[in-house]
Length: 223
Image 1 (cartoon, one colour):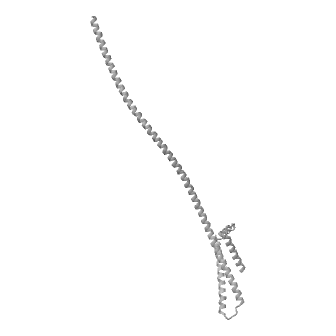
Image 2: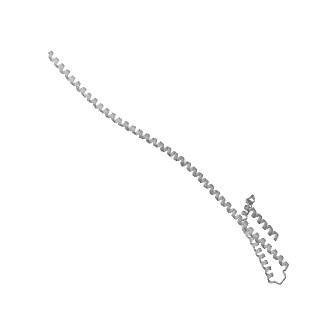
Image 3: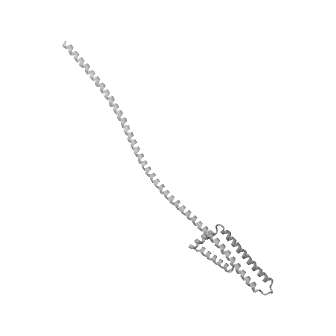
């Protein structure tokens, strides 16, 4: 029994040493403990721990009974058999208590290592997400800058077109003004031409009238 308890205790100490240092064996041990805690594994472990606890309580009870018997028999000589039994029960109780404590330490270490791995994975996922967000933000800022540059270019082109349109509109207004002036001038020329035609016609009529009078007066003198 004692040899088994010593073996269990040293095995548990070795497992704790493996869990404390980051080695390839720790990964295998964690995977093995994960499998043990699945299915009926926890029930088996609890049954074994309960059995060891009952044996520990029995050993402590035997120790107390032996000590009580010694107290009751103050004048009697201490029996060597009781001394051997006391030492045996004390050693077994110590080994079982240490085994239970080390088993509890292994369970807690495994739990904390798993929690630490989950937290690290969560932190890595958050970091990757934040990096992706920063990259997207940088890409978005570049796109916004490109759009701003394009908008600035379009605004400058729009200003050029507006100035060109204003120049063209001024030229059109000037041409229209010139056209109105030319039309008025052409109307004046037409009116003057009509007046000259009328005067010409009047002069012709007067000439014809004078010619007729002259020819008529000449014919009278000949007769």
